[in-house]
Amino acid sequence: MDFLNNALNLAGRFDLPAIAEKAGITPEQVQTVIGLLGKFAGHADPAQDAADHSGVSRHQIESILSEIGGADALGQVAQAFGFDIDAKGGAGDLLGNLGGMFGRK
Image (cartoon, rainbow, N blue to C red; front, side):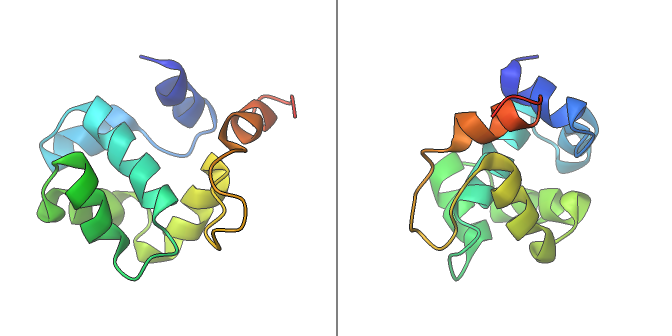
């Protein structure tokens, strides 16, 4: 497991191996897709954007979405990763926000 996987599991948000098994992809792919969904949360079709950038099928991404709480959860995912879905600040605060999950900010 890498840092991001540990951070997500430590935060108690997602069980990446279980989501991966249900979607039929690897935990690393789930990790990538969740990050992309957070990044594209403010877009018109974040699932398609994540599919276009990850190589994971839209069907598999929709399976991941159902496991993380659906489209309504994307704002929370974006916030957890520090993405500014209004495109005002970009992803520059990602590491700072991940640090905040561990009490450092």
